[in-house]
Length: 157
Image 1 (cartoon, rainbow, N blue to C red):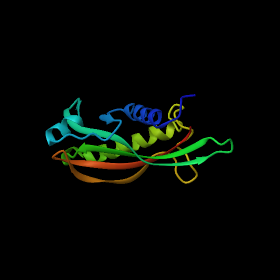
Image 2 (cartoon, rainbow, N blue to C red):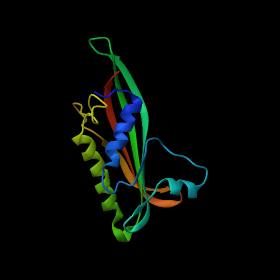
Image 3 (cartoon, one colour):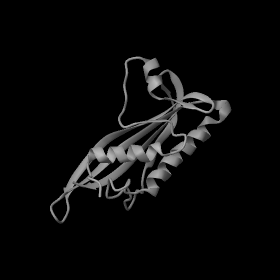
Image 4 (tube, rainbow, N blue to C red):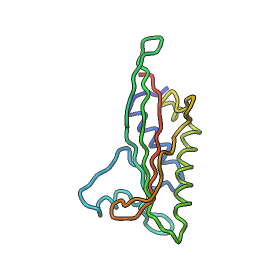
């Protein structure tokens, strides 16, 4: 079994996301640079149709720690998964982006232990990544689709 902690959970989550076809760039943390051109470069990927702003990042939102029956720390961590994709109305890009969102959700749901990095991502009222919001935003000077997903993981540390 993989050591369960924040670092291994983040790495496993990013690995699951990177395996999604056509996902784009996936960063293990929220990236920042001072200028919009630099931000565009961080989130741009080369696809068969050319370069496109299409990227994601993972951020830890919160952690709740309790003890299990054996006195070990049981940690529930909330993760923010945020994605961006350049909007192109004529290409029906909203439909393409919705497909990517669903592919990320399905990939996480299909591997509820993130290859052993966590005890589970499946809970009584939530199963895997939950879409919180989706809509157009300006990102790095580009009109984009944006999605915010939240995932809760449970680890025994």
